[in-house]
Image (cartoon, rainbow, N blue to C red):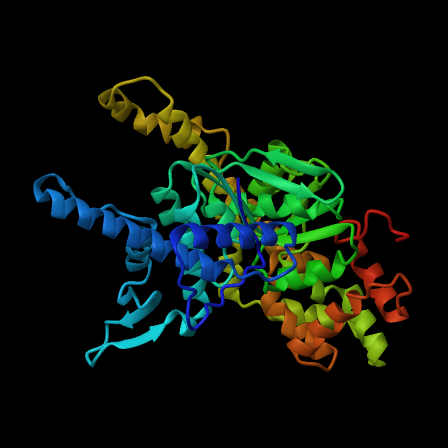
Length: 491
């Protein structure tokens, strides 16, 4: 079994040691074993490994020359040694940079420029080039069996790391590659891979991921598995790592017991929650989700599995427009908060044309899944196309449906108009997207949007349980709209 340490000395001496194959091989093995036993020390196996490559290629060339002189017809072709395999791989991963060997050392010639080639020795290679030369040499000199590579992506761009190891795996199908990595992108790039999580307290545990899972879901699950070392629950949320959702929820769930993982859309949140629960990847990690209310109909919200929280307002920005939150900020800044006037401003911000669009969007969200269900039922019928075509008028006859598009539209119209005419602040925030209302709330506090939201987020993101009075009041204002902040509220 071969081991390639994460700490590897890829410095190449200006002059390689000139020695025979057996001596170079012996020195290489000695340095390699030293690196294995004292993995914290830098060793010099690279120089001896390169010397072994050159010596082995020289021996093969001399043997072929001898055979050719004796009988050219039976001499065959020159053998491909590990050195030639390294050169071939180099040509594939670094087109335009030719790897050559002269005077017992490697050189690189840049042949893509219109002027004369630029040549430099291995001593002047970039860190990535040295790493590629080192790793390719190690792999092509390894005996069949198993090779364990710690941090295989070191010194490489993520795409280059994937390409190099794909090439090496294809070239050495007699070797099983075991990678130790923290890079989820690289881990997921391995073909037909088996994943093992290394837990500092519980040791190694093999995990199985469904081959049909999309890469983004699989990445979220693998990341979640490692989080279970210290956290007891995870909340998948909408948005990306730098999104507003991520900032707010990471400030709210700021204890070590909870991890927030943004995964994109609301559908991705639901998929990740379900996949984590059913996969067994992180058995000790409670899987939860949190999504915007958006235009989702009530029957969608009530059908969600336990642990998936739907905001009681339209979207994440709406939380900053809550009367309790705004009042807390105004009190903190010693500003007067006129709640009736604020409500009137929210209502007045919605134009007649937007009111129309809000009704249509809510109606569309109600209607689309119902119509999709009708089409899905039709696709399950075992009948000819001609028979199906004859039944289309009946299938799409509203009289045969269990719902009425007209009644749904009228219901949504009544709901939206009621919220915007006589509804409370919370009802307005459920119907109208928060992004357009947030500037009103910030202006009421005498601030711009960025300053207003930063003040709230930064005040929530206090790690100590000894919160300031302002932070405590913000937590109270948001407490009924968000899931429990910590698993143990006293920690």
